[in-house]
Length: 139
Image (cartoon, rainbow, N blue to C red; front, side):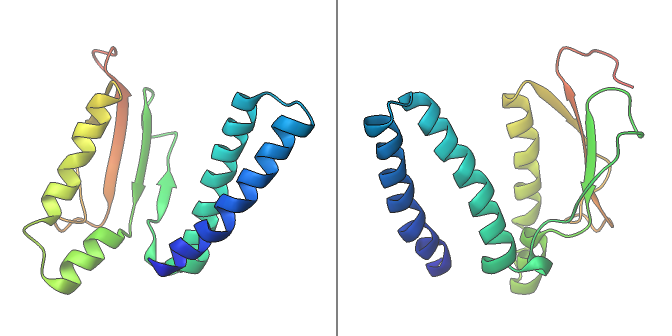
């Protein structure tokens, strides 16, 4: 957590100063600068967390497969830090709840999650086939 706080201790002042310069001095659109800062935050924090905070072996291992289904998006991962943490510290009863949240968040995004395997249930992968909810018979 301290490593993430250090990231924001540098990122927040830099983007605030640079964003104010772009808007107030150069006359850039305030909304455009906000969007640029958000995109910059997304990319830099992901890279920072992936390679510095968690290390390469402690993140999800995403694999996309466009050939498996015609509709929606299909991906899977073979490594999950939530699964690793729950197994290491004995929180196996909570682990399925973490996986069930995927169904809820997909539904709120107007999608339907189809899943055959999870690492939590002992599978070799966690698979996700997400299809827009207006498609009635996905393939």
